[in-house]
Amino acid sequence: MRSFYSEILDREMSIFIKLPVNYYENTERVYPGWYFTDANRSFPMLANMINVFEVPRPTQPEIMLIGIGYKVGDMIDFFVFRTKDLSQVNDPGTDQYTGEMISNIAGRKIDIKTGGAGFFLDFIDKELIPFIETNYRVSPDERCLGGYSFGGLFSLYAMFTKPELFTKYYAGSPSIGFAKGALYINEEEFASTHEDLHATLFMTMGALEDSSYVAEMFHMADMLRSRAYPSLTIETHLFQDEWHQSCGAASLMKAIIVLNKD
Image (cartoon, rainbow, N blue to C red; front, side, top):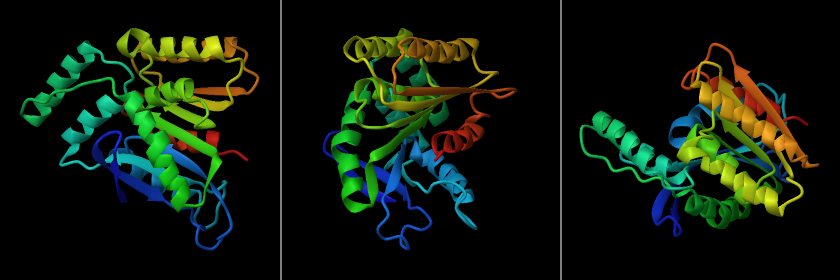
């Protein structure tokens, strides 16, 4: 883990890095960089999953994992930061609902403020990626962005607003309906100015999640297919008998397989 101060966010970030198993042996090799949000919670699980495919010998193309996390006192801080950073517009209803929920868990008043994804994406674009690609052998032409829940929403937001940054996207159980479907505005703005989208997108959902969440995922996939972008590949997967919390690990494992094909 490396500490990284962001001028854009004006706070200390914790960047978790897992090098490919043969990184120091293959000193000339440049690796794809996979950037994942919510690293305080998801990085250990995801890093171990990738290690399964590396040891005793690599059975998939090796990748470098970059987990984007926070310097926090506890997991309450983590939830406050992620709710702000992964949502693209301010939604007072989410602020109130999530604030009350987290306050009840923390036993103290916690203020939640959504709508910071623009700054967070700028941090990744202008500070984090240059740092990683200057200090590690990571390819600027093979970047993947992934996240779960609000992290999935952020992946889609990034794809529509800075499509040149990444070539692959994972959106696990994405909160597409957040803020009355504000993501559709991002999609429409992109479609109005672009004739192609150079991306591979993998979206998942648990079949036992809220039916509106499931419907939104398939609706987004259908809408993107209707645009007929020549360079866009979309795959979706519905995990039967799974709900939002239960399908996270299976979704991450599936994403590694689907998005890391030769």
